Length: 507
Image: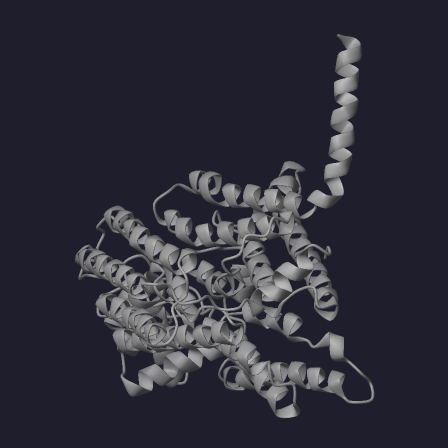
């Protein structure tokens, strides 16, 4: 990690708050107008959702209107980022407007059936099968022994010929919701919405801890991506986001109890979605490792608690499935989907062009992914030990890498980047270092990626990669050149001098 990144990624969290403006109510008034515009859009969006979950109606009008909601959202974000933060009672008024607005916007869609994805119906079916004594990792929904359990939940589910892919933590949440209100998808979506709103509150606390404007939580709380994907489509990623933020909050306590709690939270987040496991890397307190005071032992306890939490959660499924616990995961990890991450597309294109068989192509993809993940983890550990990288920055890097090596990248996966982008966006300052602008370009590109990821619902995959993923790759490459500007610019200047001398001498 180069020296220019040091002040950028470690000091951005300590930015002092702004002063009161002469008219602090103007920002709140603008936010209220943006909220009303978003609410009106969501009312119209709800009218485009068919009442029959198996309807064959086109989703194109829905997605097009969904994209328009990003306009008032972007205006609200600009008000938060460009105007001075409010203080005193106006800060409380703004936070009340933002958080209550987040609740109301989600409630507008909660009672509607999902129309872009049927995954949430499978969640309810998994809970039913599990509570009747069948392992969702072994017994297929179409299995004859589950025939008495079939009803509308089964009819609306998808992938009925495949075992479940969702880890035990997710299964326990499905089962708890089913025990409280059986066969209710809308209650389960309400549970997910609760965790999503909890994530908004946790993000607010993290912003306050870092001395940043807590109103920045709007960038996540009002984003149309999590609102639609969680409140309407019923995806569970908001649960993993909430537990990841809880783990980061808990990580501030370095005593034995705090490290144990943090390990449990990371473990449970991993049991909901696999990717939070990499949180262990930036959470390591390597700089303070000393043999005498037992600091390294507390980090070891963090890892052991996480591993134990994951291991114990699988016990009921080991018993029900007679040892089979991974379900469809191995197949999912080896799939060659058109919506794969950048790493699979890049490695797959090279390997396929070399004429390698399919199983060897998959092996190469997994090997490259493992090397990238291990290399990035080591680099982050070193940077964290030298205090050149913040916890939020390390988390964003690893979560982004997990998306890049994933065999599938769906729009709702991208929501995991939003909280860390919010925490890393710098305050209202204008330094001129190339590293600062590189950071702005990275964060802006990833934030824009959350806007444009919804195009995957309506574009062909070649067009999607051309307009979305390839654009993101180019922006990240440019940001890398900006970071290395102090190193390559002198050589570029010398090269330009030699080119001019040669040109003048030649002509």
